[in-house]
Length: 135
Image 1 (tube, helix red, strand yellow):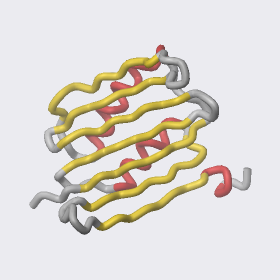
Image 2 (image 1 turned 30 degrees about the vertical axis):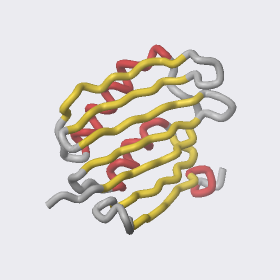
Image 3 (image 1 turned 90 degrees about the horizontal axis):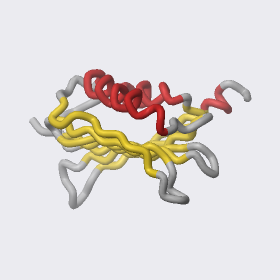
């Protein structure tokens, strides 16, 4: 049975990966797809955007059941926007664990159950790692 789930997150990090990290982020996408038990349809593609005000790495991977994407900004505070959509079920906790690899200081996410687009179910969550560690 299909389970149309859309996970959207904003993560704050100590530093955003730069242009020398392209292959690292492509490998991260491969490990993400494996961790959620899915298969790659189109290999990850990551590029560095140098447009003023939008500088950062951006990447995408197409999975057999849809896609995932991420974009990092280094300024003013390093953060990223992440997206994972699939018609197969996956565990949000696994995705958050993979995103922790970027050195999260805080993450906020929303999961949209899009099985009924006219009345989707929405769940949200977040973790502030600095508060949890009393930093």
